[in-house]
Image 1 (cartoon, rainbow, N blue to C red):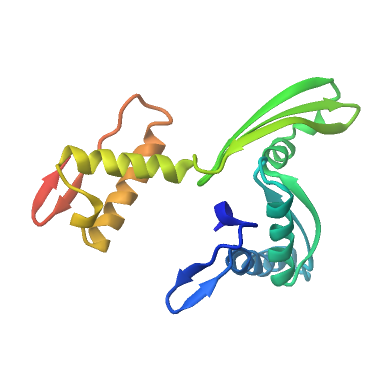
Image 2 (tube, rainbow, N blue to C red):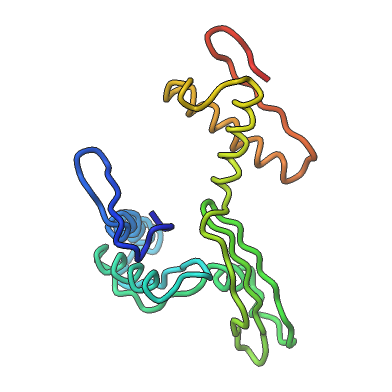
Length: 192
């Protein structure tokens, strides 16, 4: 639903329709319980990360999602900036430009950050909301099926789920290798 934040689109799940911020609120609403279990105290405020390319409407919808989840949203932070902070980029005293590449499940963001005097400033940000890890998985699945002369509609949901899982594992292996094999057993037949 993150790709549709701020659009007014509704998403059908079962017999109900949800706005993207309502679905995001469901996810955000589950996070405080995890944080409370870890911290041993109530969590009522949050800093929420958003893709670097999010416009003002998308950022506003994200704040609404946080509020629907019962959180006071203190601030929105771009995901690449959050990644840089999480990896301790701000800890250095040197002045430098830092390029952060954030390839998430559904988005691809690139930010140019300027670090100086303990300040992290976003100089430029760009991204593609339709290019992320899940999109790579989709291409691997489609390529595998095309190689077998099939389409997604030829598989039942269980087989498609198994194939997607195999494609996800292959995608991860491709981080460190030039090639990766996929093996799937369907109807007693093994496909490679």
